[in-house]
Image (tube, rainbow over all chains, first blue to last red; front, side):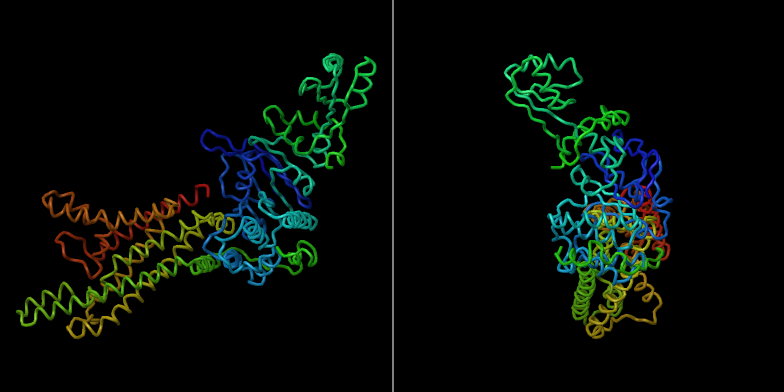
Length: 317
Length: 294
């Protein structure tokens, strides 16, 4: 369990994390979603005490991270794949980490095997690919068999097999009752892995809800219409809730309504349609719309967004 | 990632299969971790090896000089020979390379921490030891142990390889002479303090090249400038005062190479001054390490 209360981090005049409050519950995977530079890494660094908050507090399993007597048993953190001395071998790195908590060599070899690093364990980390570095970071995070896992962009640089492995391990660890907090800038990744998602943009929490709720709400429908009488149709639509974008002469993109309604409206006014296509917006688009301008989308706007309905399976496809 | 790891019993096989024993972080465990860290880097072996080579090399070189000088002074008045022996005694020869060795050891001292900052390792270190200071003092203790033993071993080796040469010139170390024994002990102390000082500078600057440059400036460049200044402006009082309080000049009074200048500190006072600087630098370093973002 991770609890952040009014967490704020300023670098000079720049506010990286702005009065953030959230709780990460055990027993589920919580995605931490936001564009690059949104404050994800800074928040995670504050959780494990690497960065000092300008204001606010954050506790892990009830206590500030630094006050735990066995920190690696409380939190396993992969903050970046490069938090390793390049001149040391992977195994020696893990042995040095393990020594601080009196963790046996057997466990070191266990996490090496678990992360598939056997063949490179005795090689120096400087020659590692990004993917191997990520695996080593995950191995280090698992070393103390922690109750809470914090993984910052864990699938970065991994091959498809590795991505799948991270997804599975995150879900598995959560199913054991552990807290798993996983950041990504990819909505699709979070949608596939997480049960709950916290969306951050420009240092502020934009959404904090079950993944299904966010996806349902944010993935709004779009109807594409091609018509020689587009201007007439635009006039007709002004009387409804629909938003209309004129993409090019004769081509409209309409939100806030569905294809059937647009078709009926056009028929009633005897407007000729050359195309009428319902387009399910992708998760990526939904997420972009959520984070595009964090000032525009404050938390109260989310209720409006999540209020609209959408076909989850359709958007995934 | 091998496919077998995924195939073998699910994604997290091993994480809970057997309960992992995890113990409290103690200073002793942190010390062990730092010990492992030190010996698992090639740079450690390079710097330690270089230190031995420098110490023994300089000692051999100076031993030959003593031999040549002895040959040249064959038949010279006894008081001249005695004066020569005073300048190039056995301890001076054995410890001839201590200044260079101190700089090599300073590189090690700086690397112990700057290597972690430059690679990002420091974040792993602090994640495991979030109190931070135990990790810092662990590094300091390991560094002191290794440097002191290294300096002592280097001196012993230097003594061994120069013994036949010095013996022929009747200029070996007299272990019955407390001043000579103190100067050799002092050499170990000096080299160790320089390594610690470099650790502190490295922690403050977080940058390998910057730290090494700073230590070289403080222990090599500035003393040379003041050496020239004390000769050129002997009448200016503050030059002499600053000179004798310089870390290297103050600290060197306990080594065999001390005593050439009239206005210097007493050996034990001098080494205490160097120790004082080192403690101050370490305190500053510990404060920065503890308070600033990693």
